[in-house]
Image (cartoon, rainbow, N blue to C red; front, side, top):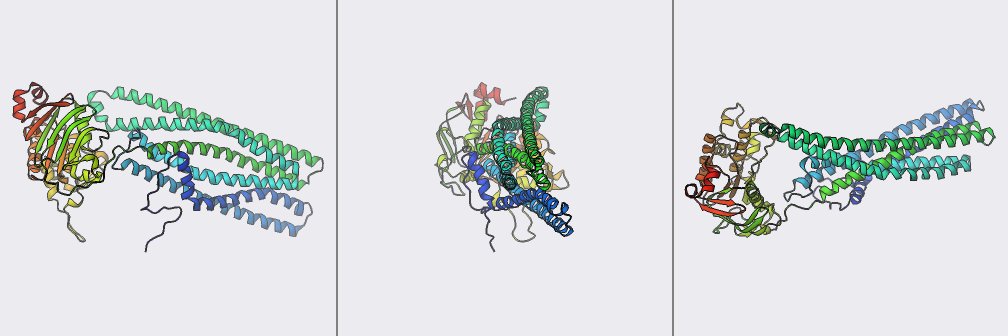
Length: 597
């Protein structure tokens, strides 16, 4: 039986259009939670009406029962008060439940939407660093979701003010008119500092996100910083960023505090004016004792919705600022714009698996490079920026690169992104491992190629994983641990050394067994003996895939380059030399200087 999605919960398979503006995002929040918000508004408004009726009930009790000494009337009034407070408490409880439920669901949906945008295969170019993205997807998502609660609470407070005004008009027209004119005037005056709150809040969120981003970068690279002795300089940079965040936060807090003070002071002055006028009328005989109690009680009650409306204005301001940051992330342009052509599971029989002609991207200037099926090619770059630019191109994220790039004879710009990812696997130098086990990390990306048996209680075929680990000289991670392939891996593999992480990442790439494998500096964190074992194992394993597999290694490792069928040397973004490792080591001094160490 298929569940039908409600108005609050869109169908999982239907993709909602991304709001183009912060206003559109806020409108969508109200639209997709209209059921819960409507119930919340009705119940919270009922609560405010009951709050308004409390001083009315007390005043009537005084006039109808206390002043007259009527016991029966007193009992009826007490019973009515008990019923009134029961409805009051129940309405608030369930109204708050529906409203907060809408807020939490919207925050959840916004977090999912942000995560989908960040994790989309096409990538995003918002200009936000990872820490800033994290702040937007968490803090800003929660703040933007409070827009729903601000509307519900605001409407409920206005309802309370309207009912209060109506009661005061019934008792005394001048008093009612004074409240009717005074409340809108107060709210209009309180809108002036609301714009400043929006600006201060946005600045606070932005600086806090930048500080979070820098902290994330420093924590992830702490070992490197300590190794090169740059910990002190990094701490100074973070302190400067944190100080800016502190200044912005203090400024926002000061503005919020001033705003709250203005709301409280304005409400108190208004209450004093209403109470003073009512007391003067009672002394003149225009009001009874019960009516005076009603007027003073309503004036006291009126201070609460006026103050809350002021806070609602603050909630709206904060929600607007967060919505603007969310829209920036959600509407960020894609890093790549792929086509829709598909590659077969086996690359077509064309002369070259990968072809680069006249490639220009960042520091690369007219590079020609081919990779034939079954070939093992090494690339040496004298400038690390050339290697990074080449990796970007082969990974399919070099939007706007010049020249021609073909995979399986088809231009990359025409290929479907999923098809390109299945054909070309780029294992970058800064690969990340995930929390779980060795097995779960090695099986990432294997997809349908993962050898598992079918049926309940099936046992996975660990042969390909162990073979890949052996080729990456990482079998000791299995044999040296009692859990073997189920050895735990913590977040970012913090329980493994740098060399172990690098070898597991290489084994993961080899286990995926892609048609085209691109490796970028896969042995920089290992010793020379392990590097030789990795070079031998990787070349042998990839050679076993020939003629349907091709391998490109971008590195300056003599062990890896010595096993390449040919080596391409890039210098200053251009093709400098081409030949075998032995030939280049003998004839090219630049090559000897970069490789032989």
